[in-house]
Figure 1: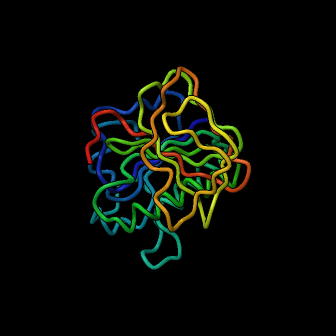
Figure 2 (figure 1 turned 90 degrees about the vertical axis):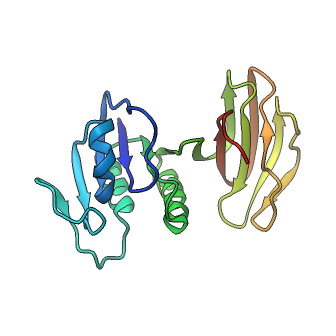
Figure 3 (figure 1 turned 90 degrees about the horizontal axis):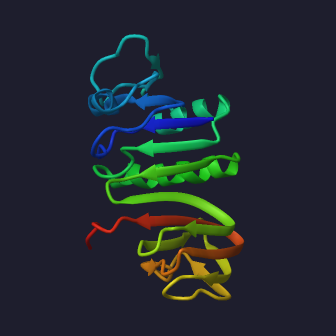
Length: 202
């Protein structure tokens, strides 16, 4: 089952395909989400939106969980195993960092969560990770936690072999897929995987 979370950051461009998905909109994201997609559930404390929408799931503003965590938990408990997050980047960088943590929280519970920003798709993965028909994309890998070990890779511009990626290093950034099928094998730890679109600049 597919789930979608709309977050109160930088809105995506264009409409979002919600076919076959259960959607949860967090707080201030309602300002842009209702114009771009179908909203099934409105949830949060609504301190950002400034009013309580009709039929919303309302939580206290003083709580130990972000609205994004509440939305993710709701989808996981409903059986969603493929989850997309929109609006998780831009604006407040502390919330963007927290939204990356949601990807790992989903991973630990057996779901694949991908956060789509304007230029990047980010998700967590371990073991064998394969990219099919993505020749030319920029690919960055970073450890979740202190470190992650990559045993081997194929189809990348910069080969990765018996390499430990560490939190205090930028090694793993800005690789490029150069084959119709590329792969890495992460045999220890978990990776944040960043797939960067061609139009992204730095």
